[in-house]
Image (cartoon, rainbow, N blue to C red):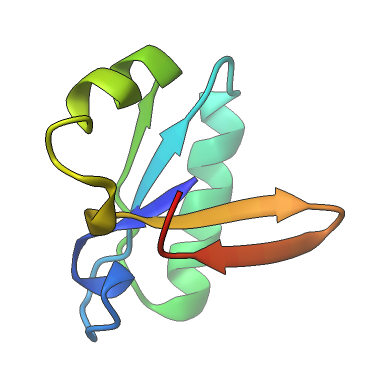
Length: 83
């Protein structure tokens, strides 16, 4: 999962853009938790779900410095600005 857009660069904004990279995701559940989270923090949370292949193709030329990586491991969230 990556944060993109202005919020990923530490700027205050009304949208928190999320890029989800991976395989099968229950989009109904995802939509439910994104809506709940947005309501809790009073932000709009647009998201994009793509495959690893799409990610490697679409973001290869862009440079990954435009993304903020969030990785879930053992119930902790690690934040990194590099991949």
